[in-house]
Image (cartoon, rainbow, N blue to C red; front, side, top):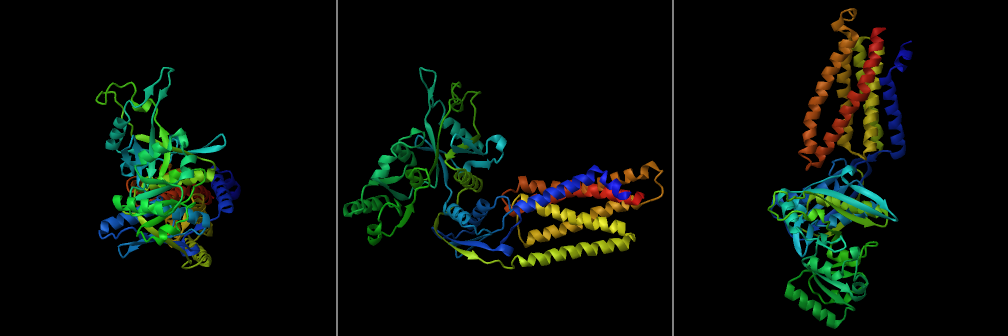
Length: 527
């Protein structure tokens, strides 16, 4: 009879539905583990120059951390030593993803928007990056290619500088259209390098994306370059002269070149081989060009007479757009650009990166032991509850509800790709105690003055409401503590991850498991 009443409750069916959904999620995606359980990869970064200021080194490590783990849901460890080396450990062993991470770490991340050979704003002027699809973020298929968009917000000063810089730059044509110039977006523009461009590449890429001339790209990049057909003695002499006159320390060259002559010359410089990246023109990669975006008439304040006019519009919310032939390439571009804009640029460059495999400290077999410990904890709690209430019908629902809550938190971890480490496992086990506290509050309220249900203020329904008032107030207090961590202290990824998972645990408890438990325990006590 009691079981039939349980099955009539919508709240109990909601719990069953979420348990089934969690089972499907775990079956399809499984769980991701941190360095403690699955190992990963360690990168050793050699900085381009020693960093003696501890605050600058802190910025280096924090920026790298934010690039790799802005949510705090991944297991990433970043440490520095000897003023020139940074160790990065990440729970990732997939060769393709490791290669992408290495490529991201190699970038200093100096983002620049250049228009008519002038820098309008840099990555340091970016206040925030939006990942809301409603604001355009993401990837969409257009014909046979994929277009990507990353929206961002500028500081007030940078937005004003940008809006004034492009003011009235579009020229209206007799046919009603307009001729608008392009803006060029660079990442790590090689201002301290000599770019050697093969003659055949220069000719083939004379016109690139948006039908832009290669001369316009090189002019806006403001880089030092030489168009070279072959590397011979005469070319070497010209290169040496350029390096000495301009005091450059690097050479960016194509993989098509045989650079043995350069290596044998002992020029005391860094040689950077630039490979062609898919359909992206080689010249773009060599000069750090990310994308080219043409202006629109409306954004240039076409109808406003002067920049001092009251109706002059300052554009703070902008977006960077680009294209790729495959969705994987487009996703890589979006992830890389979002990470760089969100974290900012490194105060120093990266000279060299080496990597090695990191073995797990404990191994996944310890997870079974932790699971057993969790079950033992639940059983011990159930025994104590049985002693407290002297009723197994109360102890068993508390045990099962606690187990369900832990299961749903784990399923949520799988859904958001949360990499579980020792700290995360401890947090999940701690959720058992929090859930049991709330269940005891519900049970005590229902047990109190039992037998006097005829009194309206102490009816079962009133007591459940009283119990949930206490639980909701506790949850609201916790949410008020956690939300500022996400929105105010977003620069500390581990705190963000902790806050997100804590709020998820609270939401699962107050919205799913505890209402179902209250229904079950109310029916038990009522009978």
